[in-house]
Length: 129
Image 1 (tube, helix red, strand yellow):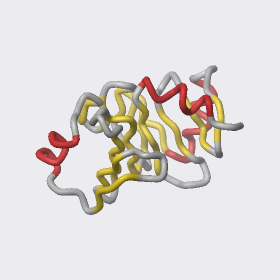
Image 2: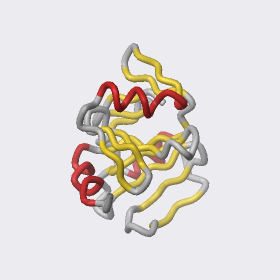
Image 3: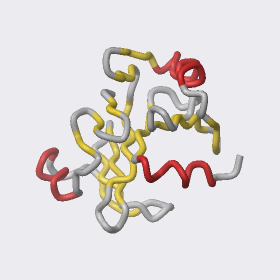
Image 4: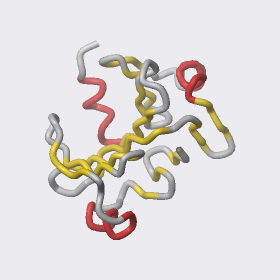
């Protein structure tokens, strides 16, 4: 995963609409509304989640290595990296959440990382500890 926090994931900007995403990547393998009322476009190795309004909320992708600019962080080292580089990092529902890097991941679920839109952080903070 190449992440520009709050800007883009693997070259796809957070300003993308569902129709633009379909035009770019084709029809997803699965499409539907999830348990938290977000519309998902599931392409297998990457899942895009949108509000009903079409605003992109988050992108979850398999990321054995996370690229942040010139820094490459293997998933196995991601929790330690986040804790060392983001003093505002916190844990919710088993996920490590980094406000600085705009991501969330479950260290026990190898290689899946979720990139967050900036407006999503308050919802993550509101989850029970």
